[in-house]
Amino acid sequence: MLAVAGITVYVYSIRDRVEEFAELGYFGAFLIALIANATVILPAPGVAVVFGMGAVINPAGVGFAAGAGGALGELTGYLAGYGGQAAVENSQTYNRILPWIQKHGAWMILLLSAIPNPFFDVAGIAAGISKIPLWKFLLACWAGVTIKMLIFAFAGAYSIDWIASFYE
Image: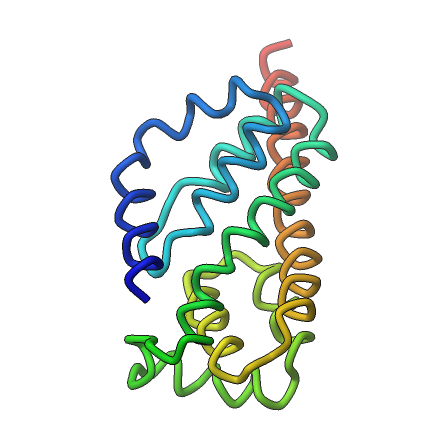
């Protein structure tokens, strides 16, 4: 739990420098998503940068790279729950999400990670507490986060074209 808290504090402290990673291309998208998703509860601007990167380089590559980084970053919440030291166990959100995770397992992880929502950290913690196998969590999380990141990257790519069409 202490390691998860340390990672979260570090990531939150460098949130203003995340745009510098965009210069690294696909590896930058991977790093941005990894760092943004490694925070537990505190928000980081990962999807905004993925949106912008999708307008500059191939959005499919950005989406897949960010999906892989994002899934690995979500391990912090899972490990916090797996260690049994989660501080959210008595929250209303946790009490609402835990039965869904226990009943639907990896399918719920896939669904919750595919939609932009501030509660996925709680879902990752619930998955860890529920002892969902790590490989199932990672696979479902990777699929869901990749879907979300592809949507943001392509939205970035097409929004630039859409905006430019107004000036033609």
